[in-house]
Amino acid sequence: MKKLTLLFFAIILISCSSDDDKTSEDNENTGFYKIEYTSQLSDADLNLDITFLWNDENGQPQSETTQLINPAAYTELADEKTVEISNLIGITFKVNSGSNYLSDTYVKITNIDNNSSYEVTNSESIASTGGAIDNNTLTVTFNTENNTFESVYSTSN
Image (tube, rainbow, N blue to C red; front, side):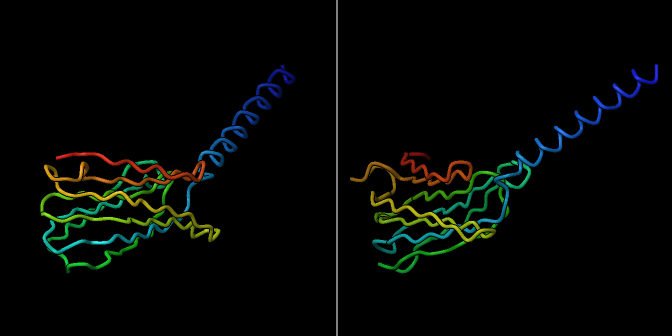
């Protein structure tokens, strides 16, 4: 009976040990990341939402939106945000109205923990719907599991 109890206890310890290993694997891509962007503004007649997107350290989607109305003409928009994430960070630019556009959008992601950085430039313009430019939204996301960007142009309300 003692041998059976010891065997059962050993199985429980092995199970607990493998659960700990799995937790550390799941959190391998968790860390502090900084996202920076710049984008060229054509003119001031523009209503624009800029939304930072990320999955927090628990894997829950988070966002923070700033609305810009008629920013200074022919300027470069720029901002940055540092957050703790689990595997995804990104940004959405959405032109709500106005007769002008954004172009040459640059996004840089930096892993604060190891100081590695990745960058992408999207040269296609976005503008309000109904004009000569097809899309009013650009979403750029970065996946920390494989260190890749995805840029999606779309039209949304």
